[in-house]
Image (cartoon, rainbow, N blue to C red; front, side, top):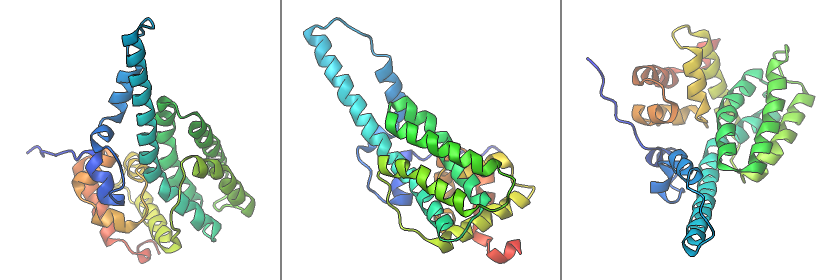
Length: 240
């Protein structure tokens, strides 16, 4: 029998997971479509009506940029936690893979919205990440760690990121990631989709509903249920 899945709007998912601090929820739910509509508005001669419509378009675009930055800030905060953990002595290459899953998909959207400085900052950081991930060494060197932190500074500043570090939470999340990679029943594609949503801790996964995780990741409900169940049952002893 086919499962009838109800998609939860992002406007409801984000506040429930990270706090109700976003504005203009009706606008958030259709950000990409709204931007496309602004892009294809017809160009008109500079009449009074045309000027008024132009001002309305500029206002809508400015509103969209502000809204997008707010969403992206929530999405990127876990990356700050991951990098703090690396700085505090967890030189894991796998942790850099997780960071890459989070950062990669957001670059194109940031460029589309017209956030030039933020896009340049993300691309610079992504280049640094790729260099680290492609390196044959299993652990990061102190030099690589410092380079990552430096390349992330423009991202942190342009998105005004601030997030409390929690090394234990990152260690548990990293262990969970390694356990998934070792388990053949979890596809690499679904693992990437799951971590691309920006997971601050296993607690978030354990407490989130299936509908919330499906809406954020796009993974099939049955697969999400398995991933969440794995998170709920995971301990670091599982990978020993």
